[in-house]
Length: 74
Image (cartoon, rainbow, N blue to C red; front, side):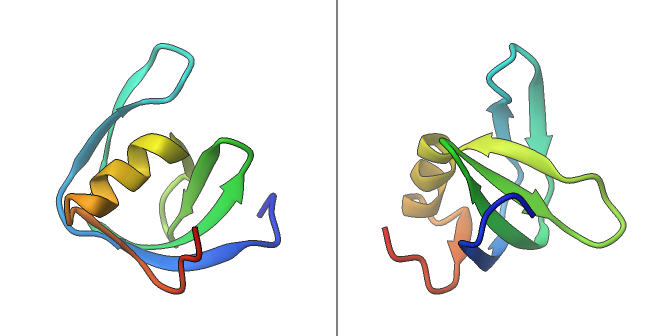
């Protein structure tokens, strides 16, 4: 992981997002280790490729109840 700030989280509903390079993706439901990487959050799960989601977008979905993050401090 690229950061010492890591958390456990769960995506409760699929989250569509733009990776910042113009590509559209949908983050699948599941449990993840989440690391802070600059202005992005990196989602890591066993058996799948890690992906980056813009932090602001992820936190909007957290407020909407689509994403939970344990011990989030910001």
